Amino acid sequence: MLRRWQGMWFIFLSFIGSMMLDILPLPSWAAFWWPDWSALVLIYWCIAVPHRVGVVTGWSVGIFHDLLNDTLLGQQALGLCLIAYLCVKWHRRLRFFPLLQQSIFVGGLVAMKDFLVFLSAWIEGLGLIQHLPAVWTFLYPAVTSMLLWPWIFVILRDFRRFYQIT
Image 1 (tube, one colour):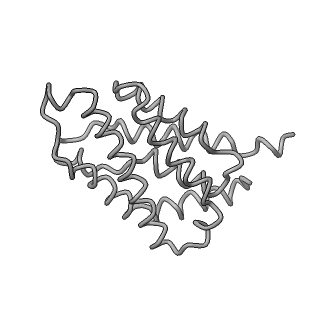
Image 2 (cartoon, rainbow, N blue to C red):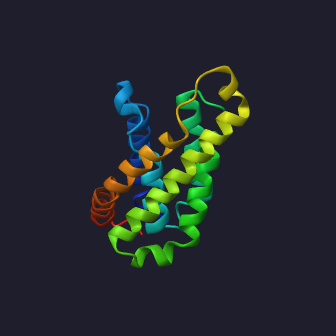
Image 3 (cartoon, rainbow, N blue to C red):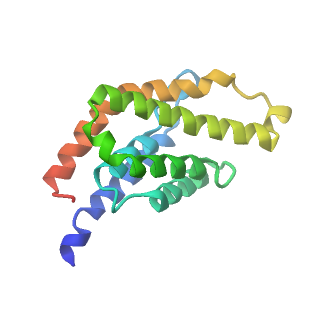
């Protein structure tokens, strides 16, 4: 019984840390380039331990993300839920990809999620009321997330091995 819950506290703390990084106040020039930390951590745990972290975790993290950012409830949750589904579905293949191919896949997932959030904000009517950023700005976090993926992967993998999270 204890073995089953071993390391869950570290998974929980990694999501808390990623959400803290996501809500960090930034200057306007850096806000567009800030990587999607919650998505990166979710992708790693869905690939590494898909029997523990999955769609429900993605939905929960997304709901908390929406609450922290004061956005429409479900915007981030839908994107992170979709990311978790795709990562759990393809986790066996993704484990054998080299880090470069994984980075490209991660960049595509983050771009897809950010495009869904952008599209839902536009459908909500914000595009008519206030000025939304240019359409291609959803690609900036995808690029920085893609560049940071190898380091996130190695750091979380080392912690997973140290705490023997299986």
